[in-house]
Picture (tube, rainbow, N blue to C red):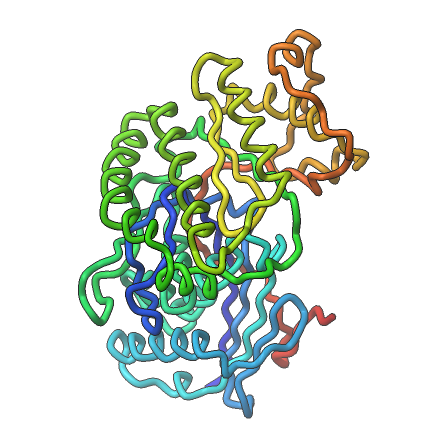
Length: 389
């Protein structure tokens, strides 16, 4: 049998109800449910090519142009789980025993708090499923690579059910609403730093589980109520309710990180200035028009409706002055931001930062679909990467 090659892309998702803490480290079973919006593949995605060949003598993996070990425990778990499902679906086939070459690239910073592992493992598992003909809900397999990856298997608003089965059979993702449900919802990602974070999410949350009293209260008392309320807000397209819950959950997540001993500090001074900016903007509007949320990193994700985008971008340009060319500073959905009027600036009542270029760039994006297969491969016909660093 000849070699088989498949390439797919998978999206980033940004949680509005955060996942933090596991009840089972090995199976990656969370303490609480979480909920996110899957972002457009057009602007942030992982691309993965996998080739299976009888000529390969060992498994190989390249990530962003660099060769990595395939002995990674989570990589092996995903590969084994998909092959097991393939045998159930199609029976034993020769190519299931072939070694594979995997090449993966992100078009955004890795390990900087921008959900790179979620997109990466979702893409790996989805591509493996296409390679081996696996169907059904593969989110519980993606979960074994990176917890949040299970939510990137679907588009739109997605809930990851924590489940109660000790083996994790019911810990999987389901779509709450498709990306077409709320087309007015837009996202601005303010990239404060694209450096790798000092404390990984895996390390941080395991310490939180052991040491944070606030985490226990959050899991039992706060998250269940918020999930009910935010799903209702999404259903009714009630932005103010959606936004308030999103911000409160982000704040509590980072409070848990500070309650951890020793503390995990992911936000920085610029992050806190962004929080202040959002609250001042909402106060100026007399209603909640923008919501912030921060994952385990300093970068902000702002949720807002389309009719607020121009004003918010114009004020970001004032408060966070940049010397970077506009086509490099503002990425994503094409837009020419207007210049903020003096009246708008005065109403905001916030002084611009003296330091320039504290924001590296801004990504303007929106909700999008789940993973899909594409035809352009990252590997050559002999299984070597087209791009190496």
